[in-house]
Amino acid sequence: MPEGSTNWSSYGIVEFSPIQNYKQSDLDLFYSTYGTNVPVGTTPTFAAIDGGFYDPSSPEADPSESDLDLEYATSLVYPQSVTLYQVGDASAGDPATNNNFLDALDASYCTYKGGDDPDFDARYPDIPDYTYPGQNLTGYYNGTANCGTVPTTSVISVSYGSSENDRSLFYQSRQCDEYMKLGLMGISVIFSAGDSGVAGIRGQCIGPTGAPVNGAGRFNPMYPGTCPWVTSVGGTAIKPGGSVHDREIATTAYSTAGGFSNYFSAPDYQKAALASYFAKHVPPYNSSVYNTSQISRGFPDVSFNGQDYATAINGQFFPISGTSASAPGFGALVTLINEERAKVGKKSVGFLNPVMYRHPEAFRDVIEGNNPGCGTGGFEAVEGWDPVTGLGTPKYGKLRDIFMTLP
Image (cartoon, rainbow, N blue to C red; front, side, top):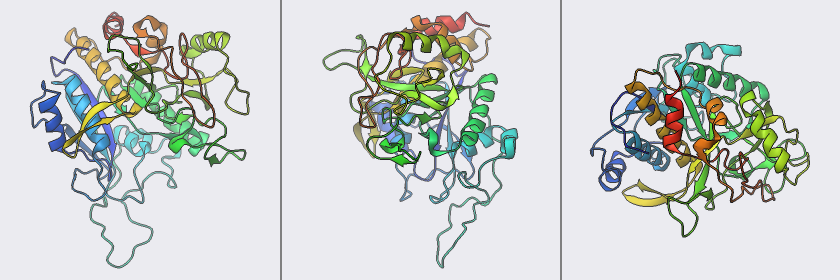
């Protein structure tokens, strides 16, 4: 990947208050050590949503995720702008969700199909249901919910998700519709696949009653990666003893997420890849373990290195692993492609998946590794698309050239 050279494209990173708050001193340490193309003191463009705030000294603040995302996103695309969408106020008891974020981008979504779910999505003004004498309400957002008030960037990367079955099909489908709309608007929406293999959030699987269980159980796919209208990014690693020029393997520091949706059907753009996969590599599990219909949405779509990122956190460097590193890295690559298109007067690429599935040659196939979980070894990385690493890792030059040929 080359360095950015203009400021003709835009890249958005989503973080949620009150926990995720970056430290500028960490960003500066990273820029002075590794991201030397970025001037020390460079800050993201701050876009507050529903009381989103910047306070790294907050006792609830944990800078690690924000530091990771911003250090690498900014260094890879600079001098293109990076917008930090900081979502939600200081209330840890009523945290903001992806729905609250989407409301801020598109006013129509605030009322689409009845609007957000008051049982799961944050409500504004943020007035606690119960208060007690002396309760500190500083930082609670007393304004109305942001609806269509925040500009969109051309690429949006989100490193947060949940188990698909944590919410109803209606809830997840409503949100998935909005991701489709954003793609049609020319916005590439990118999500990390997850870090628990074939299990869901916190390694939970689906029990006999449909409730989450620890240990063995039915595979529990991660959302929004299972939504057909986002690009789900899995994680890869350099093989022990190998180099950056070698074919990568599925991550070993954690289990990169992948599998098949229990809610969403396979989109047309993915059907040929799924047919090829099942014709050659039928997994050794029956329908009590995962959705064996062979016609459901598979994820991830692609992969990107996601292991041992040197990250400045609280003044020191730590090796951080996770698909939460893979997603912003892949998003940076797309932002650089948008930059090249902008130079010749073309618009941003928007929804990526149909083009990528038509051109598997633009990816390095990953054929080693697996994604264990739920008391099993999970799925295996194999030739072609697979539910561990998707199409593989991108070849920047080839993928750029393909998108440059499009209108």
